[in-house]
Image 1 (cartoon, rainbow, N blue to C red):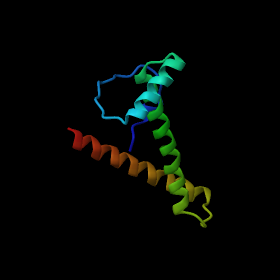
Image 2: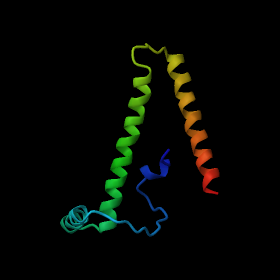
Image 3: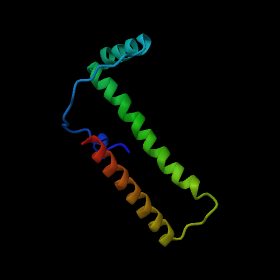
Image 4: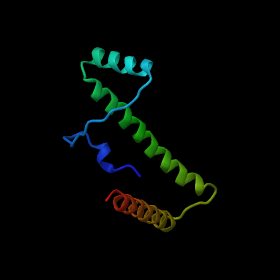
Amino acid sequence: MVSDCLWHHGEMAKRPMTLDVDEALLEAARAEARQTGRSEAEVVEDVLRKHFESRRVSIVDEVWARNAGEALTGDDALALAYKELEAMRRERGEAAKAAS
């Protein structure tokens, strides 16, 4: 799961990254940067942030789709929310262990 820190636009630690990018995409990013007065890095970060934000919405849609046709009571909805929260925390913990 993607860290919540992606959704904040404050000061964050940044690391250099080298990518092989399609020439047309690179030129489009450069043009966007020139037109908007932003750096190429800011344009790329913005596109990535929007992608992951849209992905976050689709995850919610997936949860609802799994329960389509089932009318959830307030208690059922709360239990489902806690179940999903526990799964997210488990994934985050596993990712942290793998990274260390």
